[in-house]
Image (cartoon, rainbow, N blue to C red; front, side):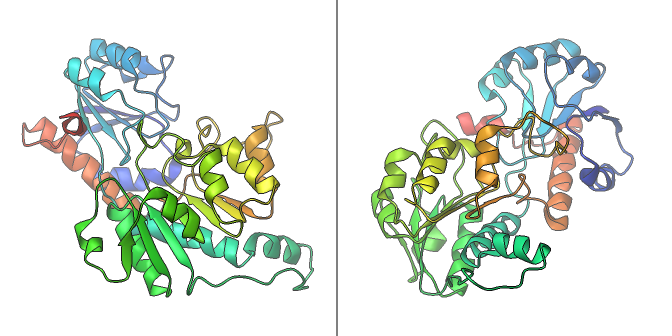
Length: 332
């Protein structure tokens, strides 16, 4: 089968080739999937996309006309795909529900430690051969209260990791995790209680209409002035401009972000020579109490191996007429 691989990155190549095992003809496309690049999938029965690709109704209709029958996204999230349109067009959509919750959870811990231990300003000082410790007194995770919003696979792993540090763990989710509900060291609370009590708030929620701007002006006002916010979920879980304002007014202590609501066309690209920088993002990057990573929480050997293995297992199941766990099932 001929498969178009959109938004291909060099760090994915060996994992994709290993999972494919020379079974399919792969068309490598570095560009994102847009109305201008759709024709590159001509002759392909399947397209493999990334979260940066745009699979809206218009693009899906064009893909259908080109003969595409399957979209395999190399991501857990599907908010970049119009699932209803795909179902109406009889285009199957498969995702990777879980590839390594540890990868994301550990990155949450890394962002928390970077903020608590002031690693960003420390690295900058040492880069200037300044080894002074003035103003570098940090904070320990032990005995802090951690709020985890979203208690799926990632949230569950993260809860265990923070518990291992000796923190109190509070949880919020519309659907409770049975395993965590049985832990004496973790407790589900309402959103307001979590905002008011927690020293660290980690967003591990999926993006949908209920979680759009989950953290905005009012939520930031409810948080402790000493609290830090961590977002490895989706950029639009937070009102980024409101977060910047809260940081500038010292209403929260720090922000760790691996995702950004306007990241498309920015993250995963080398824009070091660009003079046209996103002003909101640039303002955040300039702050010592903000740590920004470029949507890399998933980027581990284990995660990439699992992601591509699952993706190509789904492609094989589609080609062979086997059982296919499609993303459209979430609509039912």
